[in-house]
Structures are given as C-alpha cells and as structure tokens.
Image 1: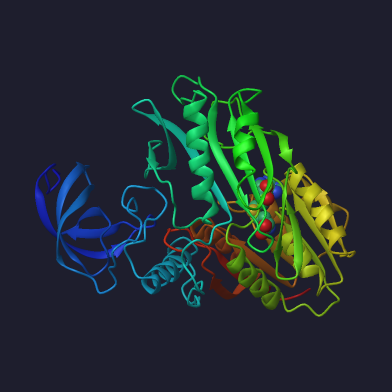
Image 2 (image 1 turned 90 degrees about the vertical axis):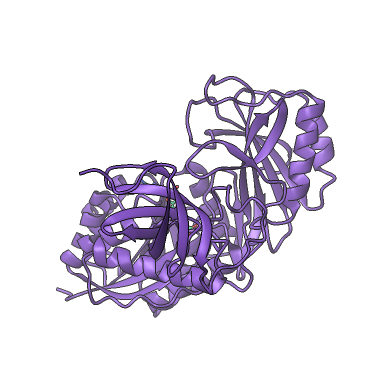
Length: 456
Ligand code: SAH
C-alpha cells in the first residue's frame, strides 16, 4: 500500500498524543505522523520531511489550534538542541506528560493494568538545576563551537548559556573558547579520529559551591594547559581541573584514565546532611534538590524499622546506601566502577556511617555469589542504568525473596519490562512514584515499591 502523504507536501493534522521523545503524534486515518514540537490537542499544518511506508516525520508550518499548555521557550536554541524537548510546554503539562508515559509503559510493556501511577513530583525551579554539564566541542567555519548535540545527531548546536546548567558554566565556556582559539588547539573530529579536545565536563557542588572542570582529550597531554589553568582558577569556586584521556573511537564521553592538573580530583557536595565526594568517573544524580526528594521517598517507601539488612544494587558512590543505612541494621552496596566504590567507602567513613559495606563487581556476577553465600536481604534497592536490570540479577532477587524491592529507574520502558518479570515471579507493585529530575527534557525518574506476595 502506498503511503497517503507525500514528501514536502503540507497537511492539516490533529495531534492525539506524544511520543517518548516529546514529539507530537498525529493521525491521518490510520497513518501516523510524528511532529516535532507539537502538543496533544493541537491542530497543526505540517510539512512532511521524511515519508516511510507506515509513518512520516513532519515539521510544523502553522499552528491552527494552539494548546493552552504551549509557552514560548526561554532558550533561543531550544528547538534545535537535543536537550530540551519539552521547553515549549508549561511545567505542569511536562509533569503530566511524564506521569502518562510511565503509566503507558507499565500498561503496554509491563502488561500491568491496575497499577496506579502517582502524579510526578515536580521541582520548585525548573531551570539552572543541573550540577553536571557535558559539552561536546566542535569546529564551525574554523572556530571552536561548544554546546550540545542536536537531536539524533552529533552536530553541535552552540549554546553559551544553557538554562538547565548552573550559571558558572557560561564563564567556563567563555574561558575555553578563548583558550582554544588563542592557542590554536586542535579539536577532535569523530570521522578522522584526529584532533585533541573532545568534551568539557563540569561538576558543581550546589551546597559547597565547589567547581570541577574535566577536559576530555584524545591524547596524553593538553598543550598549553598551564594557560587554561591560569584563567580557570580565576572563576569563583574552582576546586579542581582534571584531564581525562579518551583515545577510543567511541560515543562514550569519558575514558578510564584521569589526571589532576590543578587542585583536587573530585568535588564535595551534600544531599541533606550527608556529604559526598564525587570523582569525574563516578555517577552522581544531576539534580541535587530533587535527588533528596527521590532518596527520601525511597527511604519512606522501604519503611525501615532498624532491623533490616538492605542490599543496594548499582549503588554508585553509595548515596542511597548511606541514606538507607541511617534507618537500617546494615546495608551492602554493589557497584561496577572502581572509582565509585572508592568514593562510596570514603563517603561512608567521612559521614561516620559504620553499618554499610561495599562490594566491587558486576551485579550479575556478585548477586548470585551473595545468594550462594546464603545472604538474604530484607529489602533490595536497585537503581540500574537505562538498560535496566540484568536478567541474572532479577532471577536471583526473585530467589532471594526479600520482603520489599525499591526499584529506582531512569527509563520507564526497561522499568516496565523488569516489573513484568518481578510480578510474574512473586512480587506485586505497591507504589509507583515519578520524581522529576530533568525539567524541560523528556527524561523521567521513577521510584517503585514492590512487595513479596507471600513469605515462605
Ligand atoms: N544508586 C546510585 C547510582 C545509580 S546509576 C545513585 O543514586 O547515585 C547506576 C549505577 O550502576 C552506576 O554507578 C553504574 O556505574 C552502575 N553499574 C552499571 N552497570 C553495572 C553492573 N553491571 N553492575 C553493577 N553496577 C553497575
């Protein structure tokens, strides 16, 4: 069957829903049209850009019927940059979009019909909330360009003052641009694998005010690094400047090796009363205010009485482990990144938390070993990366039969897949609570409480 639309032609489309990337979804009879920047309930005139057999991508040429939830994005590059796909919606509408997406995933992928998804807990201020920036560096017309990748591409959209980042980043970007130009430093080219500077990664402690800059390079040394240091240390809060070496042909931003060139190689920050050391290679939640809300929710859902042994799988630098340890008998954290485990141990010691231990290794290897050693946790916390939990991990948790599982997820699709497995293996979903960590973007964070159906 031929598609009912033609490339470059214009059509009037009613937007009936929104996809996972925030694009509007319209229907022309049974034919689906994805329209970037369109909102559910709108009628838009669309020019078809790419036409496939069963669907097409189009762009808005006119909004015929505008949503009440549409706002003018405050960032001038919001439409082009791959970060803020929801900035054209009110924050309330963004939160509803996220709640709905979690519910859709749980119903469609998880096949769970009667699960109530609580309204997404939003943040007080949906801008300037991030404590970590990762800027790709590129070249345009012979001059360095620093910003973010455009949607589905590695073209860098210049952005000197990202509204999601801490304002110190604008200053760092300015210093970098002059450094790169004045010293004629080569910029990495993904196609040829030549050139030095790949990314600039920054971290800011929102409570301590500490700032760390990490320059990712395709080489062993950054030429004239002393000139860069001289300028960067004038920035208020600068605590550490590090070089990360990444010589691989890869999309992964950071390489395995880091060298401190000035100051210390990590920053300190607080979540609530707990102080954390954060190294460049360690995972740390990007939104400190909402992380506190998320962790407190996780602790609340676990309803710890002080007698529980808790297993925290994918524990990173021990953030949730240390939060839980204050209310549990013991916590064991498991994590694959060596540096993160070192940070986790330091964090526990510096906060005088003694009832927590950490084990380095892949969860899929360590959890079955723990089970063989008859380790039997009362509460299991999992906070996996986007791809969700490994099957071996889920199988072993099901065999361990903890009373509760607290599942923290940054990807509703894999969360739903894993909930399907767990509900088919003796657990039921008790509470699903999204907590927004990423205003203006489509990313979603959810905490779920599962309980064991019958204890043997
Ligand atoms: N719970 C932590 C970290 C969550 S992010 C926090 O809230 O800060 C997910 C973590 O899982 C990362 O630290 C990552 O390094 C780790 N990880 C990824 N794959 C893993 C695996 N196979 N086994 C154990 N940990 C893994």
